Length: 253
Ligand code: G
Ligand code: G
Ligand code: MN
Ligand code: NA
Picture 1 (cartoon, protein in one colour):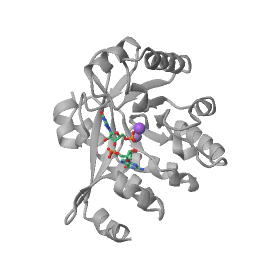
Picture 2 (cartoon, rainbow, N blue to C red):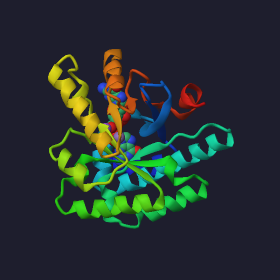
Picture 3 (tube, rainbow, N blue to C red):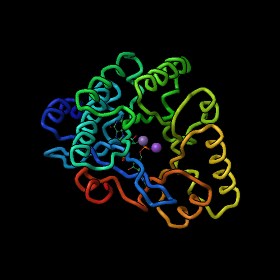
């Protein structure tokens, strides 16, 4: 409750900050995209991480306002990069499942993008598997993905493989990218683990879906993913999530 009370002041006081983590091609080493991850710099409590406040904010709708706030910050960044003459890369934001009970939220987001003059294909939504915990969400999410594409946004399936219905979801949803959960890459010495990864990469290719390997920390994993033709790697091996100005300096061309 205390955290929820602090929310208003923190939002207007800009205590929430957007960090970015690069998605890097293991083939070329180029940064092909980034994920926006929110950090809460509380004046008294210091940095608070999402796992400590997102579950709370999911219960009262604050999460939706926070997601919109992050989305707007991302639009402002893309506008700034364009003005600086930088090569634009798509940035993804995480969307809470709470949004899907308000069907007009995508219109609202496209209006915000328009205000910053940002092309919607530079914006991607990450939907986590747990969005589908409720049976009757499937049709709602399907329709939302259709609308995302109609508005020009991209969309990806986050934490793929961490849940229980992953493969079933693939035939239901028309996503642009699969973000493969780090559990797939934790034991890459095992032949079995490698076979699973190789098959997932082939499956994604067949479905014409880009692949992002998450939680990669070791060079050996990078080598294997390059061979397996994975499109992008996101992990500490390249960078932790960093403040936007640090990201610009290190990863923007
Ligand atoms: O970087 P990290 O430990 O902070 O992220 C933890 C989790 O919090 C991730 O699973 C991510 O999906 C979630 N998260 C981070 N930023 C946001 C955000 O802006 N909105 C939502 N809904 N989730 C976020
Ligand atoms: O939305 P999602 O759950 O995918 O958010 C990604 C989470 O993974 C964030 O909490 C981010 O900080 C974390 N993360 C990113 N790269 C790595 C990594 O290489 N190792 C580990 N352990 N965590 C990572
Ligand atoms: Mn994510
Ligand atoms: Na993830």
